[in-house]
View 1 (cartoon, helix red, strand yellow):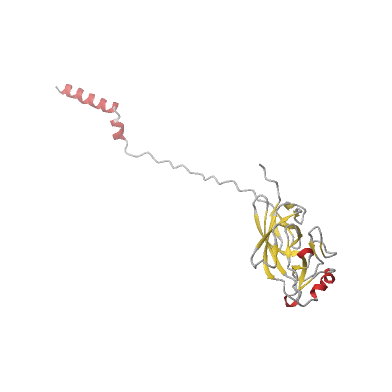
View 2: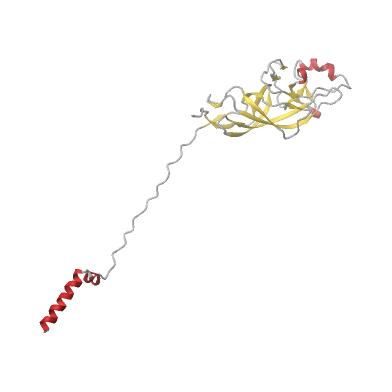
Length: 240
């Protein structure tokens, strides 16, 4: 009888070992948790874009896109011009191609008055927009394209002799009611440039004759001079 019980007990133990219960009871410690180090992959640094300096005093040749008149213009109005020649950095790199838009802003307006006083428009230039849409703020002023003589000729080019320390403005007196460049002088008055003084003396001397409005027509070309240097990347044509 005892032998029979022993065989039964032995059989039960063997069955438990087969089922792995014995191993479960024999394990008193948990297996250690292995923590793996996670490495953060840093994104590759973006390549730096090389910038080129366009020096203060650089003159851009532009063509007027809109009509600007001392009769209708108001302070704060903006107008557009288009670059007609590439703009270069001080190292000779093209930074603005032909077709770049340069936006101007009206700073002050004096309509023509009786007594032969011509209209005047003072402007500044505030931004450039490249053909690819990139926009850059600038600080620019109106300037002449031809420093040897003053003219508002058949080619619609407004120009005048350079006058230091005087703000250049558009002033009535060009052919067919056009505008030439003048230098602002004391009392808010304007002066015609060079030979145009003599040409305008007739109507300026007539006390009751209204002067000509300053009208800058679309297609008129003039200069924009940078008052502060700017930095821009090299211009490359967009790839379709």
